[in-house]
Length: 147
Length: 147
Image (cartoon, rainbow over all chains, first blue to last red; front, side, top):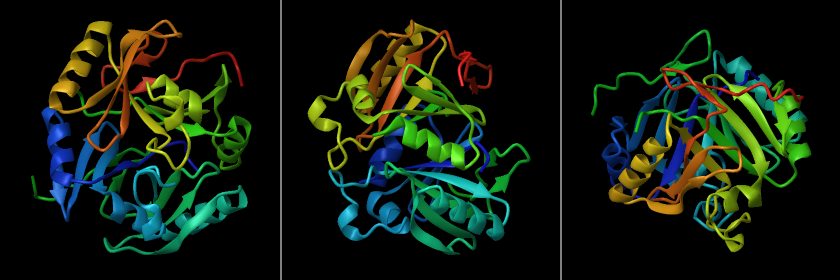
């Protein structure tokens, strides 16, 4: 596993409110399918519904709120092929992680699974052909043609 | 506020266990004062005691566990001067953030304060003269001379 983070996704209760907050601080992002993407240096900061984020990581509905075990943040580590996703999830399990979502095809045409580290911090391990991954591991949020 | 993240700090229950987990995945970091720093591309990933992290952000002891409001993750945004810290905290409050810790001198010889965004996601806004901040906002974890 290379030492890098591709995306930081923050689970939010009200996407419009959260987007307006970061925009008031000068950030500019793109909204697509009820998700806001900000390019933040070599990674992306993403705002997405808290419950959808938890479910997407394989947590059940009871684990999605504030004051539950779900911290509301997911880190993503993107890789260059589905095989690399399988290999990293296997290595993480071997190292003591809990695989919360086995790898599988994603709605965006990629391949991803999730694990929780020993403290429950969640990582999505993904191959996403739509997100350009540079040689150095930095990612460029694509131009979705939206504002 | 520039669109960038300087550090991602993960609150952990057992620093040795957490460090061993990431090292089993191939990461290499430095431990100093019960804190582990990993260089992760242009930012740092940090492991620190969950309760210390929460208290450092101005949350009280009751808000530090899993299953509380504290998600266990803090993002840091480092700036080039104490004045910039004051200005950003004021802007965040104006935008609707809750300042959980007013800016002040830190144990590491810097100046920092914290806010919670509308969903409670915590940001530390810091000037840390020990962490080199490049023109493009990427950070280099210093060589602490430790392993």
